[in-house]
Amino acid sequence: MSTAIYIHIPFCIRKCNYCDFYSVAFSPALKKRYLRALLKEIDRAPAAGEINSVYIGGGTPSLLDPTEVETIMSRIARRFNLSRDAEVSLEVNPGTVDLHKIKALRVAGVNRLSIGVQSMSPVELRLLGRIHEAADSHRALDWASRCFDNFSVDILYGIPGQTPSEAEEGLRQVLRYGPQHVSSYELTVEEGTPFFDMISEGSIALPDDDDKIAMYERIGETLEKTGYRHYEISNYARDGYQCRHNMNYWLRGEYLGFGASAHAHIRDVRLRNAADISDYIRMMEQEGSAVVEETPLTSSDRAHEEMFLRLRTDVGLNLDRLSTARELVRRLEREGLISETGGAVRLTEKGMLLSNRVIVELMDALERKSADHDRGHTQP
Image (cartoon, rainbow, N blue to C red; front, side, top):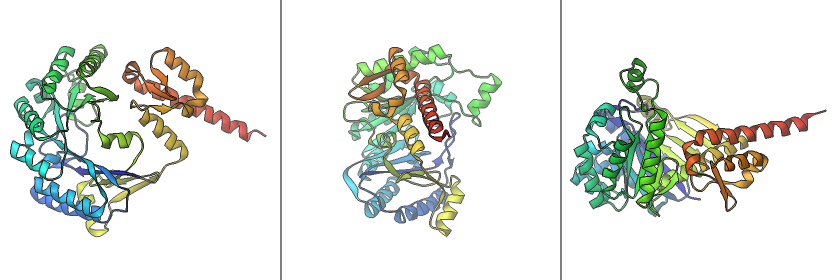
């Protein structure tokens, strides 16, 4: 059985206005202590199957020196059976790289870049609080297209003030560089972020639902017309370039997580590391482990996860898993939200747009059937 590895690098130069991910201000001294703790965690990790993907995320992993990335990859290769064709991804902020660094990351063992462009509009970038400018994105995309056979681009839609035509134009600018993969995410506003405060105060406003739906549809149509397959709700790829690491998540594969706030899934147990970087470093230095939570998954947990995760993808869910909800499946099919082919249920394009509703309805139906079954078996 193959396994994936996630490495969390929590450093950022400045937190974006919409971001609620865990990160800390970059400090060379803190980075040195953190990397020492991270390598110790890798050295002490349990045995695992062949590693077929490594994902270095954050934060801003491109703040690392390529030599530090190479050290991490060497330690992984020493501790685990790293597949010769493993997918090794690293997230890149366009404002933190130059051509020399892009080339050096390739030498360090990275074979896939995930470039956080988010927007190609100078106005939108300033509103988002990104540290890079549109010109930085154009340069980074050009360098990636010259140095990497596989690179992905992240874009956001639903940005305050954005129109559907502007969202489409930003995507078209990205596509000129020929990325093999595009992730398109609707901007969500989380409590505790500057965006949340600005929206609460009324100083900015999100586009209305009709505009966001139009953005989603125009982005999807543009990508599909130019040869990208919509293989997951927010992800599109040319054939053969689906993100191997994320597919492992969505198909409930096993993975190890290293670093502050990292998660792992091994033998139907989910583990979580200390989120605070100081706690993480202290625990690794003093105890040799930073795991603060272990959650064994019940059969119900596994069933719910399988439904929620697999239905996000074009792999879909085995129809047998929905045998007790056939009436609902037929109704959702009549509404054009799901399709049933080859013994699997998949979301349609319309269903992907309304995925939360579809998945909640299916899960509720299965829970009711299970509860009815349990009551039937406990009647006197």
